[in-house]
Amino acid sequence: MIHRSKALSEPASKDLLSEPRIVAEIAKATLPYNAKVPWDEWVGNYAKVRDAIEATYPDQFKDFNQRMMKPEGFRRPIPASHREWKTESGKAQFTVPEAINASFDTGEDKDVLRLVTLRSNDQFNTTVYGYDDRFRGIHGTRDVLLLNPNDMAKYNISNGQEVGLATVSNDGVDRSLGGLRAVAYNIPEGSCGGYYPECNVLIPVYQHAQGSKVPAAKSVPVRLVL
Image (cartoon, rainbow, N blue to C red; front, side):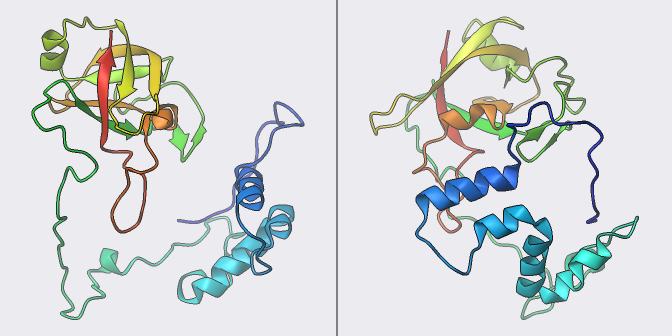
């Protein structure tokens, strides 16, 4: 469902920037000028962003600005939810990746863990609204590291102990994050979980999905720092 939102509180500071403004400023500073992408106009009037989305996906976002102002908003059409498959066969098709661990290969090193970055229920993309995660029973902080109890026993880590992580890479760049509270959790052995975007500092840019180039945020090779 797509609908409008309305702020309930005053900004904490006049210097706070919106996510679109931050993205626009990064783009202007790093990308060559492109008249087809009017960053300042888009940030100055979000309706123009919605117009551009409508022009790009007219079948899904027709009359975007008008429809989103309705109290109930509108539903983005998803054919699969109606058992309509946009394939040559007209049936659902499954694809198998070439490798599950394409982002790294630890070989015989059993001390390398696979970090999975997560979002809490109190979060929308990079916007964090609170420090409680009812999904996982975490309260009051996001500086945690979810570990399998067997891995905690293996490394002699107690519940609540402060630990850190260091990325395993061969590019000579030091990527580390400390001050994490170990939490025993039902996560596969050899894996660990931490929150995004806090753990972004551990993700090498060169580790990404082969096709989309999306950072491998669900498969980051790390070592525990005790």
